[in-house]
Amino acid sequence: MEPILQHPISASSPLLAQHALLDGAILAVVGVALVFTALILIWAAIELITRLRVPVPARAAVPEPAPAGSRVAPEPLDGRTLAVLGAAVVAAVGPGARIRRVERIERNPASIWAAHGRVLVQSSHRFRRQSP
Image 1 (cartoon, rainbow, N blue to C red):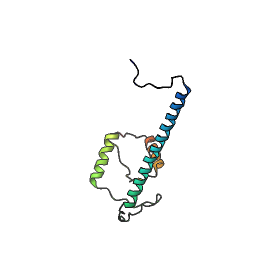
Image 2: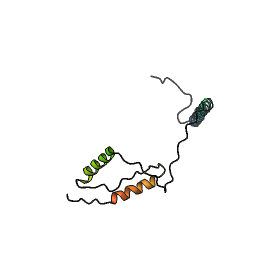
Image 3: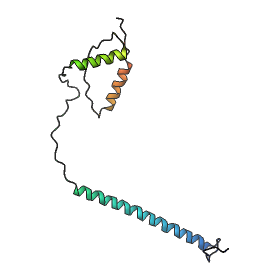
């Protein structure tokens, strides 16, 4: 049986190697051109969407939080919140535990280091169980 495609150049010919090298170079150039074309189309779509976008109306002014060092008068806790806190303390520490002070800690997302420091300090506390 004869091969379907007969190439006049033999397999050991230097012309075959040059032909393969040329095919590879053409493939690389076409591939790079396609990638850059796709990137240009994506950029154009983003520009078009940005220019056609309807401006969002301004939101109401958000009150700024108090500075970190200042203390704001705390809101008194209602009875239900105190009962939930007391139940959580009894479940975690045991009966006979007392809540001495409750403070609200305002979360500042930019203050990750401060939050981690609080976790370290709170985890270092040892609770004393008082006998009833």
